[in-house]
Image 1 (tube, rainbow, N blue to C red):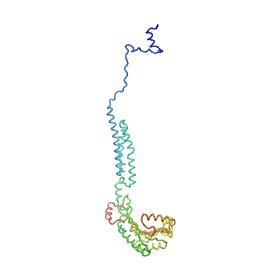
Image 2 (cartoon, rainbow, N blue to C red):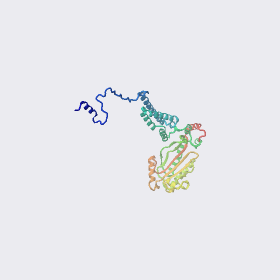
Image 3 (cartoon, helix red, strand yellow):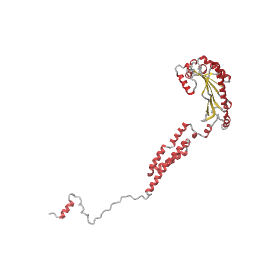
Image 4 (tube, one colour):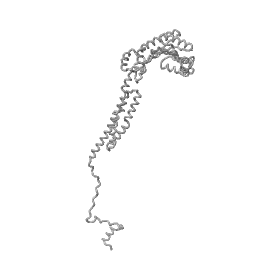
Length: 367
């Protein structure tokens, strides 16, 4: 018969196959429990966590604000056209300082996100990028004030024209004298041709006065004068009749002290290549041309006189008629007939003469 002690022993050792016996309930008498090991790392004796987070976040905000302010400075300089300022030492130095602050923010945990935003802003808007935009804007508008030296700006205000002696403008006919001479010339030609050929006339457009460029990037005080044109209300057709009309005009211009008329459209005396004459006037033969162009001047004075005849009877394919109709729609001129016009370049108004001479004193040696 198995005793209670043996049954209890078998309970502990049964099925263990050599393993140490399980301790009795409650453990062995006198045994001490082992205390668990504390693996918590020691507290960092440096700045408190909240204080460190605040300082690193502040650095990120500084970087972002610096990037925004620098971008505003760039665009402000762009608006005023200061292209030279954008590429100056000061602007490049500011760019480097801002970049340095951004890099510092990127290496701080609390400021990294704001530093990335500031970096993106700086990549998009920086000195080279905004400088290129400023250069394109300057080129498109023609405003180069920001990239010119003081000497260039001074030359830009030159009242004369580069390569032309200012004395020419002072000694030749003024714009008012050219206008008066043109009116007198037109009146005499109209009267002569009305008497000889029965023409009636219509004025085409108004006179036009445009400032001449001075060759230094600015406008001079001299102008190009274009008179209003006069046109016949009747066609001028037939080779012989055209010659008679031009001969009558030639006599009138000679009486006004101008040189004899010169024909651009006639290959025998113009010296222009016949193929070019055909392209300009419809044919290299004056007998079949759609356009005649005669010219004279009163050199050394600036008046230049043009007499043109447009003849639709020589239009073989209708192309010349189409171009004349388009021109008539723009200006109101007759589509064919004779037209007279005067052009004078580099003329000075009498009202500007005193100022012109005064301003020339600041430009000794300029021509």
